[in-house]
Image (cartoon, rainbow, N blue to C red):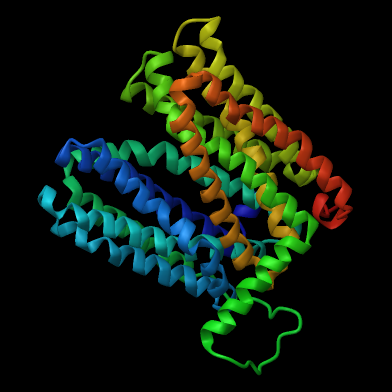
Length: 419
């Protein structure tokens, strides 16, 4: 795993991602705290979160078209610079009547992120050898958990010590550092031209964008492996949407905890994620990505079911902490297998479009999951509805590898191993 990190270009991308993600967590924790303190309204706080989710649905798919047109490295650098600039209006917010500024900033930041995410997923396979792709994705998952472990604590502390303006400056600095590091990556990384394209194009610029977008959708529909992966994101995002709504309710009503206990559980899962990242980096080149996805999905789902149901048999909060550490490990195994499969299945010319649409599909199904949780959480019981998440992961871990095996894509299911 660490041999992959020593590859200069990937090491720069990884470090930039860690710094930027930590900044994201700082802002994600501090902004809702500030809104709640300013207004005392849970509606205002939830509206802020919705403003951040909306661009996933509106722009996620179409942003990928532009990612496939532009140089991926340059796209990430410019995105980071825009993300830093977009935080400047937060310096002006002083009272509740300026709350609209926070919504606009959240919407803008999330919109720019629609370009950054697909560009990163499209760039990563170009920075490492194919046999190191699993390790690279496990390191990215390790990144996410390191940021998740450090960012919320720093965000909560920063919100209390330096206020919203200080948090904005801190987050903007992480974007600027990230932009500088990505700019140091050697080479240019414009997408390979799609098959059948020529320098001559007819019609308006937007007509070309529409054709390219539709070409990406046709690829998703026509390629069995990609279609299966989209079915996967649909079912697991549904479960994640349920969890996002009912997790706090579960901790409060079932475990008898509050904000402190929620923080402990988030940190516990991040610790498990760090362990999972190391594990995948160690074994990833020996195990097919589809098998990683299957094992990770089944174990993640079973441990989730244990988390939601153990209080009926074993009272106490400490088992939840232990189980959250445990669930973080297969979570990374699942994530690394999933990312590697999709990156390997999609030609470079289409990666931006596919990953953009993939993110949009996940956001749409997560929104459906939140709706189901809000509708049935009280009627059917919190634990009953939360069990949906555990079950969909178990089903995904069993069904998806079986379907992928039927696709007979050996180059995807088992990446070459360097002897």
